[in-house]
Structures are given as C-alpha cells and as structure tokens.
Image 1 (tube, one colour):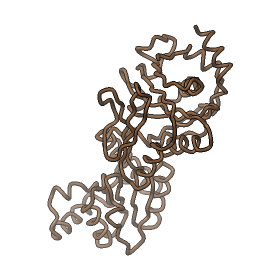
Image 2 (tube, helix red, strand yellow; image 1 turned 30 degrees about the vertical axis):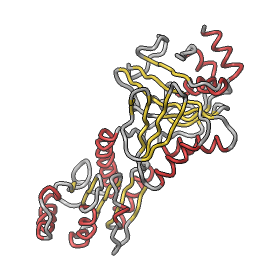
Image 3 (tube, helix red, strand yellow; image 1 turned 60 degrees about the horizontal axis):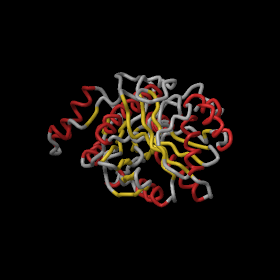
Image 4 (cartoon, one colour; image 1 turned 180 degrees about the vertical axis):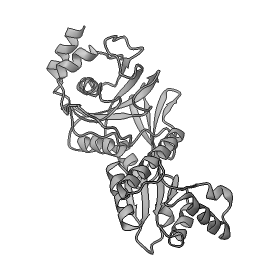
Length: 345
C-alpha cells in the first residue's frame, strides 16, 4: 500500500514547499484566493476534529496549490508537508478527502508530538468567491463564517459571528478581525510597545497627542494601551476606551497611581464594574524599569487576554509560534513514507 501511494506521489505530486510561515487567517485565505485567480487549483485544509489534544485549535487551516506550494498550519509543523502532499493528490483527482493523523488513525507510524490525533478535511476549492467575501468582511473588521458540507463538497460564506465546529453534517469555520492595539503615551514607551506588537501580529494604531479614538476604532477585537505618566492626559482616552467594547484596557502606573485614577473616574460618574475593566498596573509582570521590558510585559499581557477571548470565540487565528529548525521545503517521498497514504475517503 505504501509503495503504491509513494508511486502515486512521485508521479503526481511536486515537492511540497512552504510559501511563507504564517497561521493568520487573512494570510491563508488571501494566498488561496490569489492562487485561484492566477489559474491554480487550490485545496483548503481544515482541522475538524481533535482527539486528546493537539498543537492547534479546531478550525486551523492550510491552503495548498496544485504545484505543492502551501501556507498555514494544522499542527505544530511536523505534518504540514505530508498534508500538503496529500492535498495535491486531492487536487489532481478533483475530489475532497479526509485525513486522520495520530491517535485513532489507522496509520500507526504517525505519532504527533502532543500525543493526540487530528482529522483534517481537504476541500478542493471551485472558485475564490466565498474566500473573497470573508476577506472583505475581515477588512471591514466584521466577523464572518465559512460553512463546509463534506457530502456536497461545497463551501459557503455567511456573515456574522459564530463558533468553529460541527453543526450537524456541516463544519463551520468562524473568523474574527485581526487583533488590533490602540496605543498612546510617552514616545519612548508607546513607540517600543507599538514595534513589539507589530512584529507579534497586531494591527497597531498610534494615537497622537490631543487625539481621541473614534468608536469604530475601539471594537471588540481591539486593545487600548495607555502609557502616560500623567493621569489628566490619559483620562479622555481612558473614558473613550471604557465606553467601548475593547477586549483589553491597560494603563501605566503603580497601584497607588491606579487608586488616584479610580478616584478621578468615580468623580466623573464611573461605577466599580466599569473601573474593574482597567488592567493597572499594565503588563504581565510588575515594575518594568525600561521600555523594552515594558513592551514585552504589555504584549504578553495582551496575548493572555487574547487567548481568553479566543476561547470564548474559538478563534484560532494569529497564534504566534517560534518555529525553529523547520525547513521551508520538504521531500515528498519522505512525506509519503510518513503518512503511508493516510487517506480516509
């Protein structure tokens, strides 16, 4: 069986190669839509089942072109080349497939490092329409969904919020806008936090002195980071954030400073439940004494809050991993040996 699949891969599949390393939904869907519009056939691979733990959340995705070029992650980087090789076969045949790896798989030689098992749905995309609708929604900072029906081999776009997972015979992949940070404060601290946030995958908006963010800048996928040494200067921005649905509001200063801040806000009519939304002192650890440490502390704090937000929304996008020692290109014959044709149709 393994020899037959190896021969099939050698005949049909070019060498799988990562176009770039990203698990961001916008990157993956853009790669897929662009490839289709350039004349390629493309498969969208989605993690639809987890057995006893996995490196990725339900809904994690890859996009694979007919020439073996791919992007995205459905595991920690250990199976993506094999998955891409299998997706190319699906593209050649023009038929959706299901692939089981790790625990519960009939292919006992594949052991995921996390010890669990995963099931992947490989869908041969017919056109880029549904993907473009999702991308347009995300660029408007609106949530969206893709609904996949394996029996019909069909993918549909739906607007609005949702939860990634099975709904009867259909799998729904929910998307939320890219996490955004609004940052304001002293130039050194605010600038350093902005730089660290940008390389960590956040969309960053720096608020200049005298500006107040508009309501549409402070949506439920936005964090407000205030890095002032003067309570009076931060109060207008802080009140704008408190009036919004921002998922995180953090302010610089000691605990003593925060007591004074809360007293000022109470005088302005804010109640205790509103004040409880403020993370102060800002950051995941106390007493950062330089701009770099403060930036790391703040971005780590946002990441923690974001993960809690993701659990409530089951949004697996924008997970940042340090991928060390992973080659950008892989041997398809080695990939075939690893999965030994691990396809369940």
